[in-house]
Length: 302
Length: 229
Image (cartoon, rainbow over all chains, first blue to last red; front, side, top):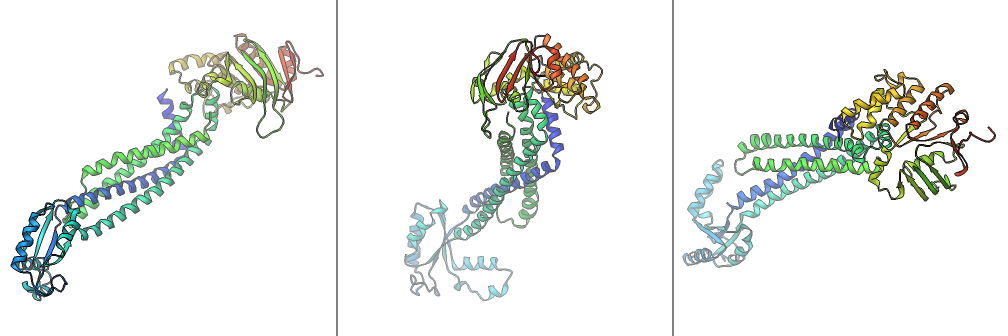
């Protein structure tokens, strides 16, 4: 196999079909960038889950003066009930740690949380806030087991899972990821058709050459390889652009904009980005290679 | 070298067979004219030998190989042992004379050093020395056909197939091409030439196989174009 011959054939082919090649590169780049973004969003969700599930707690609110749940019956929790609850929580195997938050602690936290709205803080007294146990679970997904065991115990007003609040946010991110992947799939479909068309046009515009090649006994590989490599090369260039877009997304959107302004959570790191990039190149190569291969089989018979 | 045994070929779109029970044997080193009117089956005959078509019945043997049992990936090797020349030359317009001939070797993976050795030799053989760097559109029809012959012969095939090689040329130029094919034949290459040109067939006095409506109607060792002509 003469590499120089194959290379010059590829060069001729790409130049002859420049507009089509550009269209292929752009479509492949967009589809792969969206694909990569979708993968990164999934990575982000799992990063955030790791980060937050480590911190979320189950709050067991105790009955106070103003509690109007049927469980409380309008009577505040007694010291006896409180001690019993704490001991039982600590004895539960699923529970890792239990903190007690008194009305005073709750008030201090409330003041800190709403320090920007003094009116609100003025109207609240420590007595109005419920005391609670903050329970950290060994496995945050086992919330329901703990909740059902303590929900109806005397002195318990309400059991609340902070994880439930996060779940909504994760749902949003998952929807976003789904959309990115759907658009990526549609784009990949379009890219496949474009590649297949480009190869067809290329095969047609070089039918004189390929006709002679067949006649003088060039092997299938020799005839088809330039076309195949042309498609793969366009796919790889598209993947390179997509990788650039993904790196820019991480460097600009995440590192420059989100990280300084929303430091409350963890973000996907460069390791996740670098794990996605080879996948983009592989997908780009497989996509264009397969599209070219099947087109050639139909339009470049020997 | 080429043997057809009771070969029939019917194209899917037509009811009448293009070849109907044809048996012909062509020995190594022979020069054979294939004559007959348009549609008599000459081109189908040649396409079967190249395995561009497969017969609907009978067997085709080329260079000792049964083409029906030749696997798909061995077809290129078969075609390397057969050179082809056509009425319309089929040169690449954007390549020079040298590049056109070299192309046939490049695409079968011959090394550059070999190409630079044999291409000038074959160009000299066909009488085109000194025209290496001409483009096809700068050449006369006869010269273009010589380039095509050079390309067909550069790999020293055992068989040369010519499908009306003089169809686009005037009589004087045609004689030149025939002399060239004759010279190639004398090197031991089997030549099969389909033609309409009665004058050429009559002057060469070689074997003539006449086809009519897909059947062999005449096979003469030292024949002329037609009985009435």
